Amino acid sequence: MYTANESFAALNKANLETAARFANIAFGGAERLIGIQLNAAKAALADGVDSAKTLATVKDLQQFADVKDTVAQPAFEKAADYVKSVYDVATETQAEFGKLIEQQFAAFNQQVVVALDKFAETAPAGSEVGISALKSALVTGNTAYENLSKAAKQFNDTAKTNLEAAAKRAAPVVKKAKK
Picture 1 (tube, rainbow, N blue to C red):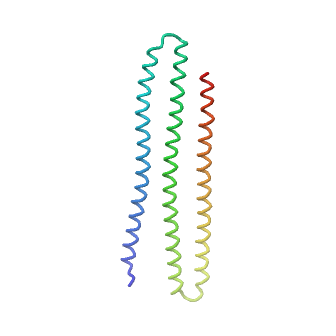
Picture 2 (tube, rainbow, N blue to C red):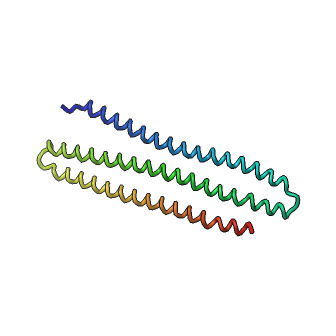
Picture 3 (cartoon, rainbow, N blue to C red):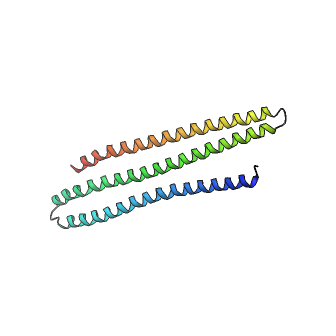
């Protein structure tokens, strides 16, 4: 026998599991970002100490110019790597959220279809047109969601490609400026 209490309990359980999955994704992304930031802070401290030691040995302007270049290039490369790492974590976390949202959206659509089918079994004569219209609206909504999802994925792919291209173009410019 089907009761509303069982349905409500199942819905609450499913929502709790979904919330836990969202939280785990968020905490995983935050944990990776914190790791990147801690590693960058440790490296920056070590590089700062090394740079200070190196600069302390400078005796003339020519030596300063040479040292400046050896300090600046690795710092730029590390900054570019840091930005790329942060971007990668953000993109991966967003993709995980997107997958979960897609799963929830598909499950919701399936529940709506099942509910409409149950309703159709007990609906009065003549309501087939309304039920058909609701199913058609559901299909249209799914199509719109899929199109938006594809556009968002293409935007992310384009942004990642542009970021990587900018980093590749900037590295030679810094090397040329060094000379």
